[in-house]
Image (cartoon, rainbow, N blue to C red; front, side, top):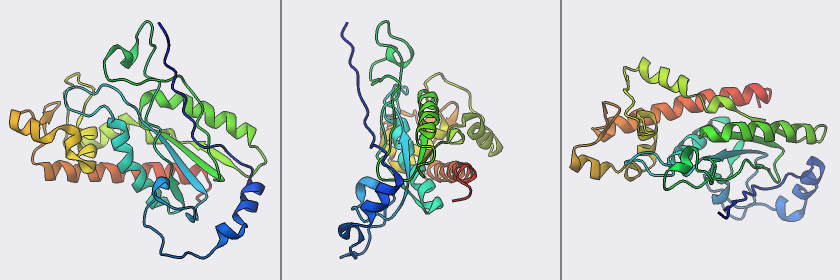
Length: 260
């Protein structure tokens, strides 16, 4: 069987001195002709962004039961990364890397046993034009690869003024479960790779990603024994979860970057 190998190229780091030289060029130092656009997402901005920290988030395309969109982790990242970047105040969010090493192709393993999965091999996540890189992953399969890349590039960039940090605190499922239980939400796992936390956060982004209308009509708008209606209550819960995860992640980022 032929293997489909998806290569992810996420920017390329440049030395700090070169970055400063480029920033000193007339074009990049030109005054703004219009007001800055209020966004922390790099792809929505012009080159006059004015930040030197980039958050590179990785998600997944994988099976999440009959109700949640395959891009569950990517939708979650749309919400969490914006809160994290705005709370930091010094960072922008690079485009989400939407894939994860999800298992082997032949013989199939992990999520590759199910339709809908797009997998790749463990590969490199590299930055360009920023002097501090933050790596966070919303899927379990991303964690080891991002940690390895951060360690390797930290050694390679030593003394250059560029830094890279992997933040494992972002992906702390036991912590989020304890938070939910502290708020009276005790789930019974239905085995669907789906849960209240992901559903609530996805509803903040777009209720259609959890098939809300169809499930309401079918009387199936619950997960793991927890009702998701009324939607307003679940969306409020999702916003609280996003805030909590952002607070935990920002604290971890500031710890490894010396409070910056």
